[in-house]
Length: 486
Ligand code: GLU
Image 1 (cartoon, rainbow, N blue to C red):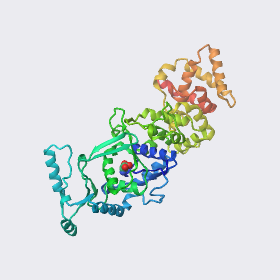
Image 2: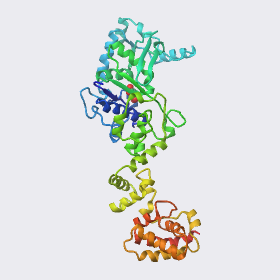
Image 3: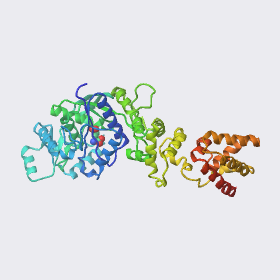
């Protein structure tokens, strides 16, 4: 394929929606796979929706995910500016071109007239309200006069009735619309700003976009865009409409059922690799069962042909699983640096844990966590003495003879010199043997004493990581505190 140029064209709402991330990612993958260009264009022509900092936020989220674009508002490019609000004159010029050819016209109708028209059409039970082309029939002099007297106006698309608008969508196949169902869309609003349709088509043309890859919600806008391309006599890009994202109950993905902003997932500790991997599979697969991907492999495998038509269900369990998988496959030193960053945000920020201590925790916990923060929050006992003891386990495992056995362990452990995991194990086994008891009779209460919990990594790993002195200290504390719970 030659001169592939695709764009992600968000309207800045304040954050990057996961659906937006999916659109951006598919555009990015398609561009990278085909040696094309990936462009970021900000569609900010709706001034009523202006949100302070929204563009910066969006760019930050894209960059965090590694979706680097080749042209965009902050880096420029040959077809800029890339913020539509800075291109108003361009749209005006093209609107005038359409007017001169009779494909667009001034409309001076007041909001009151439009409202009355809408009500009337409602009474007639028309399927949808449509403008009645009233102003299309104004004479040249009437238009001049109204423009001179500064009567507010919009510019509308002159949709020719009784036409079939047909196009091939790379994902959905042949799509057909009836022009009788298309309103004379406003192209330029009364504030002089273009609507989405006008700006989108003009820019896709001027920026030489070859493929328009976007969400299914824009499919119904496409016939209007096709009309514009026809009226301008411009070559049309290839359209590819991505399937909707759905909640598990198959309703449209919404804020009500969970987070939708990329930054929320980031804040919750999801890693970009996992999020990208997850989002890539929302509507695409390589044709096999493989689910774990790095970005490079996605680029290699991606194709529009393998994007599904049907809605893609957003399954948070799968995202969690992928996060765990990506985390486990990371080298220890990377996990270590992430863990240190995380610790800085916790109550342990001021404590100085050594790298080797943290690496030991990482080794012990790696198979048991899905998130970096769980290296702390699922095993706080590594970082501080247990604050309390799991009551169920106390009742089950702290028997009358337990204190005696724990004291024996303390005695035996004290004799050890810089013990490794095996040394603790050997010492414990010895006591079990001598007292002719099962190891469990020692291990369960010992785990409770040193960690406060009944589950976790292997007990001897815990003992080794805590070290002999800390283990002895904790057993002694437990000997005092646990009986008070019974
Ligand atoms: N500005 C539109 C949006 O917010 C872009 C749709 C398109 O890609 O054409 O999603």
